[in-house]
Amino acid sequence: MAVAQAKEPMLIVDLPIVAAGNDGGAAAIKRELARELHDQVAQHLTSVLVQMQCVRHDHHRSSDVVDQLADLEVSVREVLNNVREILSDLRGQPGIADRFVDAVRSDLISRFQTRTGVKVVLSVARAWPKSLPPDTAIHLYRIIQEALTNAHKHGGAQTVHVALRAQPHRFVVNIRDDGRGIAWLDEAEPVGFGLLGMRERAALLRGAITIHNRPLGGISLTASFPKELMRWQRRRVLSAS
Image (cartoon, rainbow, N blue to C red; front, side, top):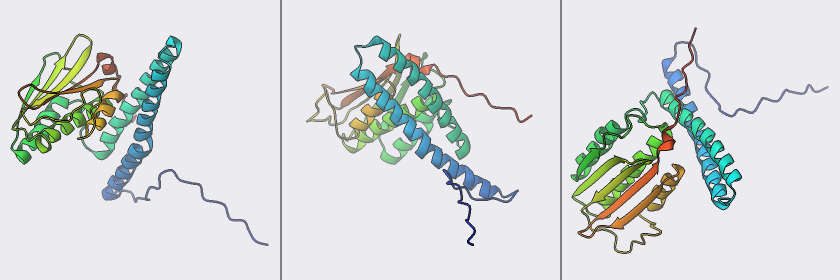
């Protein structure tokens, strides 16, 4: 009589078995966890945010639906921000949420200038927050990064100005350059040159991207988003005791 073999449980994350004291193996586990968290959790939460915004747009006439979706969106953002923090911890890399301005200045702009020779001038309003929610920081960082790349690669700019501003109800990021501009630009629906991706990132922050050619050459790109997105409570670190 054949003995039925027990089925092995399906694993969501297949982690290697590591002997005690094996630091290299522990690091490998952390990298695998970080990859799975990013691919399976962070990406899906971002998709949920996009779907919620689409539903809210479709039901904008119903205040009850809009209010309920707003509450759910706050909860999803809270989880997503915490996931971003955990990702930074697992990767052993400092996140940019607590050092956003320094990350833009020292990491992004400094390397960009060294690589391209383009001069970048950064100005930061006194009211600009010292720290940002992790998800907000990542999207703003990528918007600035894409705008700088476009100014050099497509605009042939020699100088780019990046301004981080604070208005009564919104935070604003403006990037303007002295390049060629975009001859075919449709300011109502800008696409191409990574503009669609930047618009999608801004939309995830309940914000918007505007872009227009400057009269004396170059373009001006502005990303703005509501200050209420700053309302985020950092996860508490549990004591080992």
